[in-house]
Image (cartoon, rainbow, N blue to C red; front, side, top):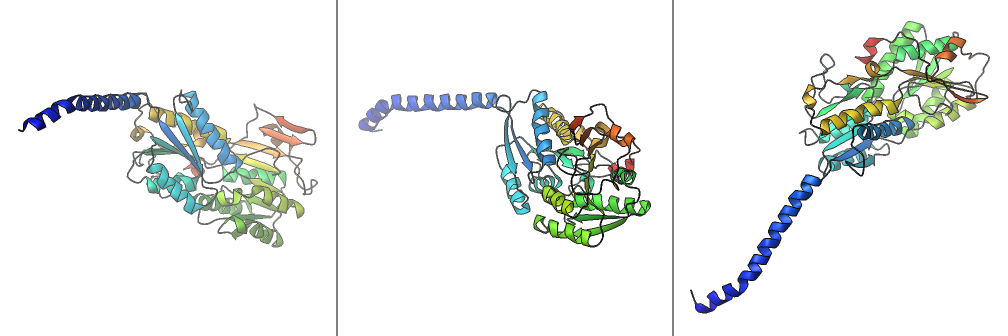
Length: 366
C-alpha cells in the first residue's frame, strides 16, 4: 500500500471514529425513543351527528379510564369522512398505512371502510355505533360471535325496533301510517328496515317507504311520505338520514307531523320520542376494549359483543316538540316515568333511575 495512502487513512481515522460513534449514539437514541414511545390510535367516524360524536367522546373517555390518556400515555388522531364514502375509503387507507397501533371506528360505513383497507390485519380495529355488524360483510358470524378476523372486534348496537313501535302505539293508539326515508346501500339501514317492516306488519301499521341515495334527497323523500298520508316519521339507524335529522324535524313540524327515532341524542332537539342507547356509554365500552387490546389482550378470545347485553336502551320524551296535534299524541303517565330524559314546557328533567320497560326482542340483537 503506498505510503501516501497509509498517511491519509491515519489522518481520517479520527473522523471515521467520530462518525461511527455518532451513528451508534443515534441508533441508541432511536431505540430508547422507541421504548419511550406511546401507542398511536386513529378514530374514524363517518359524519358529524350527535350519536357518532357521543360515541367517539365515549371511546376516548374509555381509553382514559384504563390509563390511556391522549397526550400522555397515548396519541389520538381523529378523522371524519363528512358523509362521503369515497373519502372514508381514502382515510381508511391512510390510517392502515400510517403510524397507528389501533383504529376505532364509529358507524357502520366507517367500520366497513377500515375493514376493507385492513384486510391483512396490519393494525388492531375496534368498532362501535354499528347497528348490526353481522350483516356488514366484514367476516363475522351471527351464529358464533367468536368467529371474526383476529384483528377485528367490537360490539353491535341494534336498538329494539319493535319496542320502539310499541311505544309509538302507546302514545297514539289510532296511528295508522308511518313514513320513513332510508338508504338501502347501508347494511345497518337494511337491517333496521327489515325489523321495522316486520313490526309494522304485526302491529297493523302501514310503513310508507322512500329510498334515498344520499343526504341531498332525504327531505324530498320525507315530504313524499307525508304527501302519501304519513302521520308520523320514523328515523332508523341510517347514517345518511340521521345526518340531516334537524331538517327532517323542521320539515315534519311544518306539516304537523311528529318524528321518532332509534337514536337518542339531545333530548330537546325536536323529536317526540326516541328509544335506543346512550352512545357515549356505547363508546365507553369500545374505548375500554381498545385499551385492553393495547395492554396485550388477545382479540381472538373476544366475542363480538351486543350493547343490549351491557347497557339497557333508554327512552327520551319531548312534550315540547313543536308542530303536531298534542290532543292526538298523548304520552301515558307510566311512559313519562320510564323516560330517562323528559322535556316539557318547564324545561328538561333528568330521571337517572328511569328504566324503559321491556320486553325487548332478543332476536333483534342477534
